[in-house]
Image (cartoon, rainbow, N blue to C red; front, side):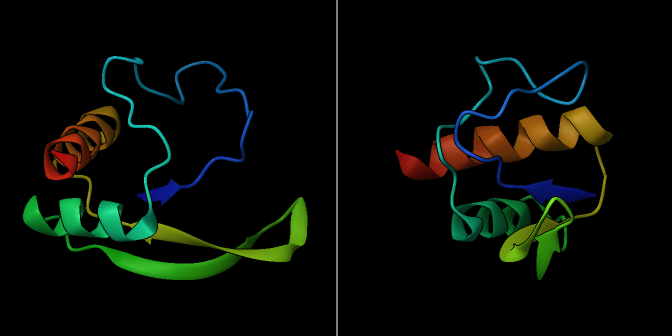
Length: 85
């Protein structure tokens, strides 16, 4: 499962996102990796271009889906929030 940074102002459509109550503003790759590591999700950082913006290479974090897709995203977001405190 790949976790991507969204472009500022990007809209999340359908079931792609999580509730704002779980969302974390502007998480960094390092925060996502640390949270995923503490949750035992074996994070791997990949530098890949987004097809529409092929000239921009951006980082993404690939993790194991231990809690399902949405559950994994919520767990990482909650852990990032906890680590920021």
